[in-house]
Length: 264
Ligand SMILES: NC(=O)c1ccc[n+]([C@@H]2O[C@H](COP(=O)([O-])OP(=O)(O)OC[C@H]3O[C@@H](n4cnc5c(N)ncnc54)[C@H](O)[C@@H]3O)[C@@H](O)[C@H]2O)c1
Image (cartoon, rainbow, N blue to C red; front, side, top):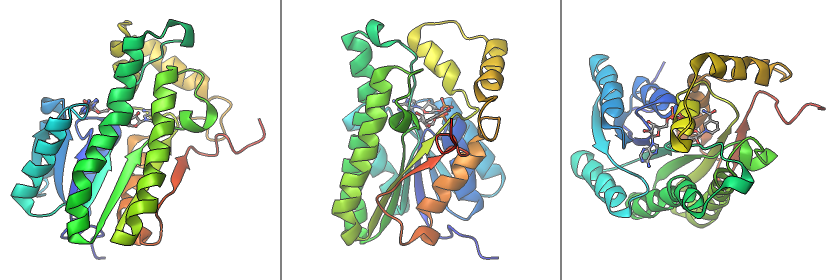
């Protein structure tokens, strides 16, 4: 069977962990040359090493997506090396569980800066590249929190992810006629380092046993009675990014195992 991303160059943020890592591996397995972009350089390098070991083409780009100059430089670095970027999958993000009444102005700014403004920087940096090519495919990551209200999360995270959904549709409406498709995946709960990273963000100690119980108890009443794997999210993002989704642009896709669909 032909590979589904052969001869394409895919720039992937958050490639050092979780969903971004699984997506980078998937794109590589399907023939893409991959740029592992992350501010965790060691994580990105570990993913890149795995790809290179399996025979894939790959480079690492260290970038903090909340820094516009770094985002521009990272895209240019990839462009200089490979001459084009066909796919951008933006999975970098960070959570926080701060409750509404406790959110300081600094917490708010930080959540918005990484999770929303960072995606704006990425979109603004990649647009001229894909417009010039007359082709490109972009997949962003928001969250079911943008759909459900995400009462367990920091309201700034929920607002940022809702903003990503809007930004994605805005760009799809403007750019699809230029040959650039833009879509967003809205994951539910995914087993990654995300919960630990959220606790780090909030300065709260992480407890793996509590984390496992949280997954188990939290999903007991869900239709699938489990959180998803990062690979299940990677598959959805890969499909939207690939040519198989050639007529799909401007959607915010809930990938949540019928959570929010059944009669609660
Ligand atoms: N895991 C979940 O339950 C879940 C649920 C809904 C949405 N999401 C979203 O999915 C995406 C991926 O999350 P994950 O679960 O793989 O988390 P993760 O913590 O495993 O991975 C996130 C990656 O993003 C990187 N990153 C964070 N901030 C960055 C920045 N400013 N610049 C560059 N890189 C940065 C981290 O270093 C890490 O490698 C995020 O956008 C997250 O909001 C996750």
